[in-house]
Image (cartoon, rainbow, N blue to C red; front, side):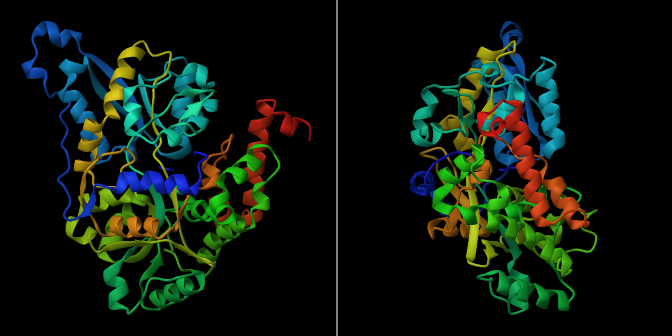
Length: 452
């Protein structure tokens, strides 16, 4: 999941987005890129071809969208110049895929390049000492303050190079369904429940839960985590990282977890949610069989690919909590180079190219979205992306402290599944997250926990 951890102020986020959004404009979507793994090979001499090495890049399968693929294709088309081409190794989503990454590192057989989360996750791989410093000239195209955060740096080393778009989480909805039923976008939770009941009465599934892909169940509470902090992202993250604040202390976060349960208890979700997956939601949302789906902005390219015309009928609004709409905003995670790679210097060269303006321009030509790199021209934002940009401009986007803590939460999605089948309460879920932090901290002999 994109989930989708830097300690920056809201003001800095606005600065980054202002710079990134300069080239954005509405219009029609650019065509998707096609695979060109062998591009450029025909023009190589036999001697040159032998010099081209194949680098393995491990990535969660759902992350390989048109923009990602376009950059891989560009690298492979320039294989003679770069001396390398990329071979993707796609892994499962969520915890299952993360275990694959950790197993590779534990066995001393990491990939040449890894597309993963933020730098705080390096603790799961043995620390920053096992990863290369990726600092370089490419950094001039990015916000220096953003790069100088725990999202990209660990122990003073820049071990993650940001790759791709700014990520957001919000509620996607079928505008035609709303219009045909005389519904307005809800401003708060009370209105949200009211329109959900109206849709249910008309035989339309109000909200879709993809319980088979359990990671999707996290979206609403992850957005809800910003409710307790908003502009106080750093103090909240620091408190969680030092055992001064606990997940159970974040009352609005716990309330956000309870809202997931409330939707299920009131039968405002699909009846077969435990066996329904994320992929099935896409066409159902496009066809109006479901009205709303809480998801990350990474769903948009998939909707466009499935049906470009219908995709322009999909809008987005902030998760409507009691106090109003909110979306979770996060700069992108990125690319890592393991120090144990036999091709680490070549991998660093390729990563530097992948995050360059040239490569990022190719990314956003294939996949119009909100870029993190400066100076990227974007045309063709579809309706939902325009709605998200408007929410950002209106100040309804905030970064979550949960993304930028020293330690990482455990299998949040599993705890939510347990809650939905009656095995846990919302408070129990929060306690499990506290236990995960305590376990990770004690394993590191963190005095903030060992002294307790």
